[in-house]
Image 1 (cartoon, one colour):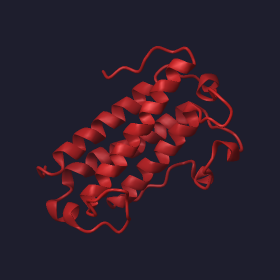
Image 2 (cartoon, helix red, strand yellow; image 1 turned 90 degrees about the vertical axis):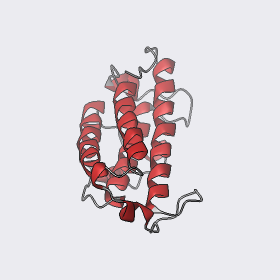
Image 3 (cartoon, helix red, strand yellow; image 1 turned 180 degrees about the vertical axis):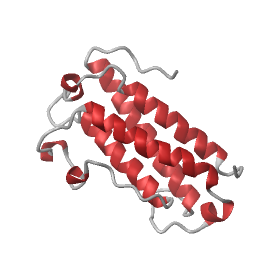
Length: 160
């Protein structure tokens, strides 16, 4: 594995585990609780993370389309027609994560140093910078789910 990939790969592994841990023990009823009007619930954030992870997969050359493509155009919780159960969302996360965990070690320094076709709000305009931003974005939203766990009466998210 290229030395430049190693820290990104570690972030990918941590985010993969923390997403799963943040939804551990979350049933469909709790996943849909909004702590206040207009606030996102856990399943909406989980779907957003799945969208982002599917985007990351395509960004690095993996052909992947997650099973909730009918919800991709939804930009606000108020636009949600209904919420899918948590279990298939978690299964789709695992599926795309396995593809990413397989692909990341094969990324080369040349691939990472290419100029990104997508602009992200970071100074590093390379593919590596894009990956770093997307992983940071995941971490941010995983933290939101972890917080919402507490709002619905569940134990804190575990790092292990």
